[in-house]
Length: 592
Image (cartoon, rainbow, N blue to C red; front, side):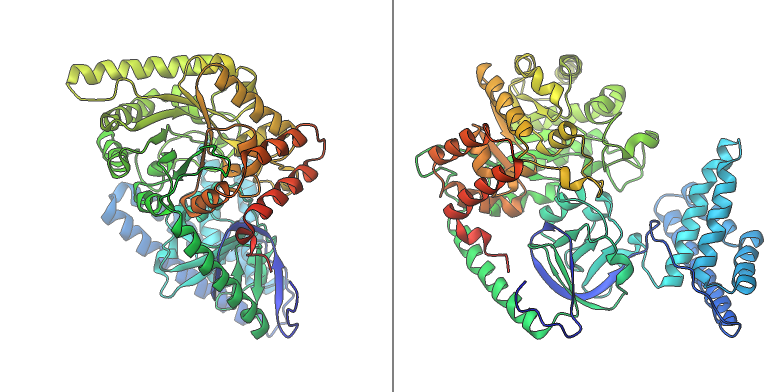
């Protein structure tokens, strides 16, 4: 950034996750990932460190008692018992004495003493050949985190609802379930040490239109609650103590964005048609029924991806059929006659349920997830399918299965669908018997058998996020390999090309609902590859429509002809960026 003043200003660079600019006070959240430094104390410092530790114990005890009472009132005494166990750990004389001994004998800071003692007992418990005792390590870590947060003056992520003024949240990471609950009236934006643009936390931030920057490495350790920062979600910057010159430059950027928003509103109700007459269906991705208003104002022509798993998060039990039916029906009715594509539960990756015991592998993007999980837990799957079928009575609902890798998965899911239809007929409940069924193409095996899959469904939707990471062996949540996550890798473009060709050979349509569809730089490539539909977050749908209406399909096809012969992902990306910039330069005026 040109012209930044050097007086007290510091610029941290990360990955832009959600566009927007905000300025305000920082709120630093505590994190299990944080490591505290060992600080040597003098004899005179020791009493102060002891007092700090004792105060943190008192504060932690009060918090646990309040949480216990809240849970008892909301759920019942049984579920509140977990905090009784936490209180017992908090008052365990062995733990307290160990911390006190480290502070007084080794003369170290209270934070380091606490973390050292907690790790000692966790390691000891993990060596015991008793499953019940080993499970207590999670409780021990939770209690340790709470005390540490109080020592550091940090706020736990579950206390975000206690904010008294709008703040910019700083954390090592934020889970999708926490992000889904962020209150836009209190959260100006957020920044994290880790993460990627395609994580579900980033995707949710864009849906909520909350500015966000991820992969800042050590931001949660460099900032303290109360500091003033400027967060730039367009360029991936966090500016500590911004100078007057920086604020002046960002004032110009914000005004340019206001002008752009006026242009976007002017085309809201116009179709997504290229300059040479090619029509593209533009849809929106949503997580909650409350996202419907954003879809309407974005100019999208329906919902291309309803991520239903977010209805399951942040609750004590799975949603019942009637609750799900009402949620799906409310979206279908609000957007009728526009189509609404409901994806069945996509458990796994960085999303998992607290009320279903799925084992430790749920944090992985591989293994027991999505359609595999649903076919195993048919009780959960049946309830959801029945709810979707009932909502389909409105006539504009479609259903699609995530993470399909084999024809048998579709056959088994469709057999369960047929059973649910028969049940609803017997009960006299209406549904759309001709509701379209689709499959998400997210793994290379699905592309290689795309013709066979296409004979069993009525449409495809390409989930580019997972397709890229599975093809390139890149976990998009791993900061060490994030640079290898390349949407323009020649292999990815060829997989998309083959998927589109297979779909069209079998007479079905194909869309893209992954993050590639919401990136203006990559849209020319997708158009040239022949996709029929693009589905993006409502917050960027208008920008995608704006770009489509300024592109020529002939130019997009020429770009793809070049790309399919090119061996360099970076060169392909640059060519696509040049085409998008030349067609709609105002979309790229967020760069300073």
